[in-house]
Image (cartoon, rainbow over the protein chains, first blue to last red):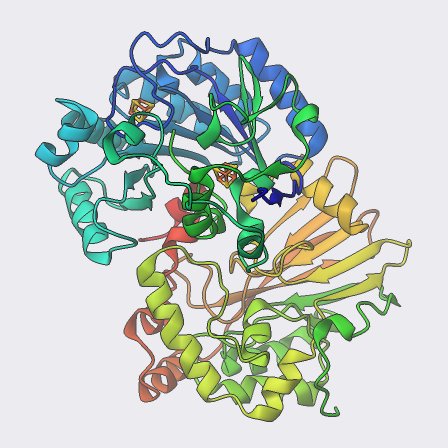
Length: 293
Length: 279
Ligand code: SF4
Ligand code: SF4
């Protein structure tokens, strides 16, 4: 069976893997196997990011998404966010554990100066410390919540993203997380659930994808298929450009050394594509809806 | 107007009619026939022509009333996602919500609107054009559409629409002035090259600003370059509230009309727009 091509419809979201795959956590489901000391992909410099923003301007990008690893491990993340916000809306995907004091104040100042939205997404995986820390590591629950509270105090409306822990779009689970966030002083909690991709460390945990977990040509003709992330997004890293954040570092996901080389259709040959297909339309609908790390 | 059951794609997409001076633009009627009547009384003092940017139905009462008022007045209408869904007998409104609770409320109001729209009016909604093209006094190519030129239900929020992105949309759609609605909150932007984008907001519900009035836009083509003014539109919102309750429309929608604050569909708001609201 040959994999169907996902057409490229123009770059709406430019993802920038600003901190490489380096992370201070080592989550059980991390699909790009980020972690402490992962040097596979070095960080990008502030100047690298500026030239990416220039290119983004030329092609009319809608928004910039910073990801990693953990973006706030980058020593110049706040400055980079400021550079970006003077030209584009931005989203930072973070585990939240490094969001304290001065960093948040400076980030808030950068956000205030812009007419565009800065979204900060914090990952949490369960509404209880025990369940969350089993996946994301000891202490991560409290530190992430403290980061979210600190952001809220500085005027941000952080979005807490959770990998689905109890089936799809469960309103009860949604409310549980909202109650938790309100109890931490977050007045307007925003919660999004994301599907788990069975790759990276998650593959070891849940067994990865089977042969039948593939997108077929017929599936691509269904409504909503045009909203797959790979039709309107690319990921720029220090090791070139990748088709989507899920397939970064996956052989075959590499699209070329420069952005313009990556503007072409992509064959949906991966198990992960079947997860995307089932959830992608839902995720991509809201302009800010993005998947995690 | 005749019954016409053609698919929108078969309709003439544009008339390139010439317009000048001031043009009133409004969208998101959401069955608010009271605000619609107020608009039709008010706009002629502001502008020489009136266009509707779509979504005649949604969470207000008595959907047929708004369609009839528009048909009678002969206002040109761009098709919104709601109009398309109702007209083509689709299962949902295709509003593009992501929160399961928003979808729950959206499904209730869609079912209500669908049930209470006559077949004749459904056919009418099905045949509305997806875009209207006009020409300004200086040859400006003006495009009226619902969400964005490339997708009927794409949200163009002020804080999520950087200049280069808008320029790309205008390039691709080959226009100099773009007018949209769909988000429910008005804004405008002049691009560095002089081209112009306006989101007319909605007359069906308040703009999440704590006020009970709604907004429409007046595009001004008489100056050096195009501009727009937003006009607050007062209407008898208490009467709307009464009608909504009488029709058993879900309380969160009624609250919004009473208070001016959005209580649902909050998840689609980018942080800047959300921060301005109460919830
Ligand atoms: S999921 Fe995110 S926070 Fe966890 S290890 Fe991966 S990059 Fe780090
Ligand atoms: S994983 Fe998803 S976004 Fe990536 S190529 Fe496959 S379908 Fe596209």
